[in-house]
Length: 138
Image 1: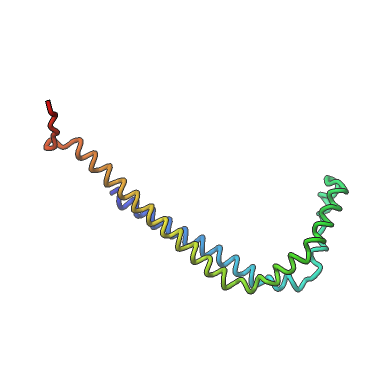
Image 2: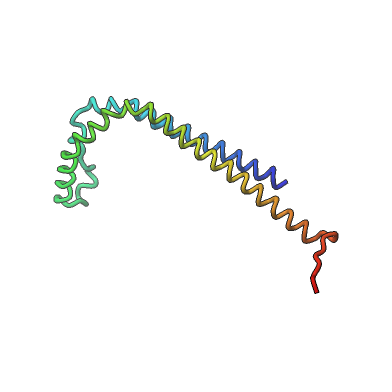
């Protein structure tokens, strides 16, 4: 009974892990494939500004610091967005690798729990068995 429950949980975890990996890969592949659209909108980073409702709560010094930081980081961000479509093949390999490692760890966890159940059952049966007696020297 405990073995079936353990392996049901393990297979459920494997299914959830696979689903999470698939969703992560799908979302990141979509973002990476659409990164070129973001690069095409050159200057969009400099156009970022605080929402109107937040302006009264932020000091002008912080606003100017954020604007200068966005201006300084704009070329680096646009360069990274330009490289993003080339990274899509490596993304698939990385997701498969991480999925494989996670799956192996989940299966190993299942074997460890099964071994723990077997050990506990042997101890429980061994403690109650009248046929097992130990000789005490003396």
